[in-house]
Image (cartoon, rainbow, N blue to C red):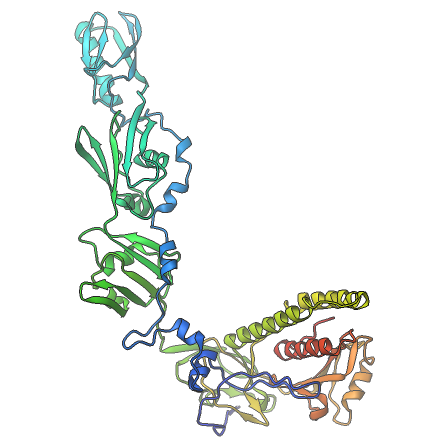
Length: 568
């Protein structure tokens, strides 16, 4: 076993950018080490990129993501508005449950058998009594089912003490009309039963006004007095709902919303949360908001008596922060972990995943890795990085969009030219459909000319340490793609002829050599070595030189990013 030796540092400045060099048919296509955000590159070069100014607030002491635009804030719905997307209007309660309390107008079924036989339907009169023949009036108003049975059974047995059985049942309940008013879209009087919920009546009135109504203080008024105050947040969060038994003429009053705070950012869904007096703190808001895992900071914006307020706070600071009506809070995952996870693949000793310091450099890490001495190709190390794959994908998509907009929308001056355009359109459409499915590998070239760039590692990097190889792969537009034993005496042409020669779709002037380290070179500019891949690109079936050049450049781009040739 041997350990990696220290490699000399290429450049003490940060290796910025990942550039794809597509310089014609015969030029090399190589990615340089390192990657910086385009907006940051613009700032470093003195530019004022719109991407920077659109996403970062550079005002003193106000660093962080910008708050939501005013138009977007107005579109944020209040928490709880989804409650009235249900089907309450067609679901009326029958009122026949054990907690129902009898009111005037209800009907009670009475059956007596034994020494006395009787079966009657007894209405509850305005005084709350039922009248039983031979017994007289019995007060039942306010009793539940169990209390009703006990009261009537006692009254019957006071007259017929022996050999008498009693059965009671509430046959039906008296419908009620409840007024719904305040901040609702359709105030009015709505029918229901005494046991229908407040949500049932609110839903008939169109729910709660999203701009002005409160979900936290809905009053039930009877004879001018408030008998219940309902907080719908108790139901939305805990499933608890106050259930007053409504009477005919009761009024539901939805008051005006007093204070609300808009929460956006790294949350499952942006909402306008309503806070009540005594709860105007960040800690209360965090209990209501459905945050994503890993949220670490809050950007607070609002107005105070002494002027606008802006602050970027950690969650520990935010929980103690007083809030005001109209504040906007943007929660963000802005935690910087001290360690990163890096994976190894290929030829090495030890574990395949490492937890490393965030500032570790590639060469420092490689120096600690033991590898098999005689079979490891330490000069062909490469790396896969998710951010590189994303940028390669975005670059490919942008190239395909330009190809589509440039040629599919072109006009024709003659019928002959129009027919040619139709054929070209079919070619372009088919090519775009295939090319858009290409998935870049995110391969980052860190080794060149037996030298490894000393770049800083990032979380999720996958480092490939390949074994030495005695073979060579011929792929792309050849008749028999295959792997063969490397022979230094053979040329590129010899290997292609050994694979059956070019296919009918091949372009014999566009042959790439792909190194094990991910580097891509033109076949005319490099000498073959073991482990290389000979990649033959297809010819573009069009006489339009400009179109052929555009498609060829995209083919190079795909070959560099994926080492796969897209069929035409």
